[in-house]
Amino acid sequence: MEKILEHKHKLILVKISCNDHKLDILRKFPSLNRLGIFINGYIILEDQVELRKEVLKVKEARNEGKWAIIRNRKSIIRFRFQNKSEK
Image (cartoon, rainbow, N blue to C red; front, side, top):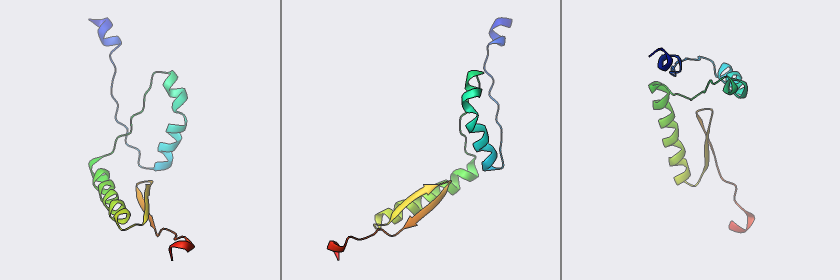
């Protein structure tokens, strides 16, 4: 029974308040991977709600013909440039 417990994987949830710290950890991911440590992004419920709102904004803007993406969990919406032949 002890052998089974020795090799059992343990899940650890770490909450990081600053996005810069998260990026530092992800930059070091290759060295952590060699140690058998794997990172899976997890979004808490409040962030999921905010992200869903941003996705809806982007979809609405794209339906209106605008250029829209999500970067760092924020929507970026711009007007598309028109060619001179379209005027």
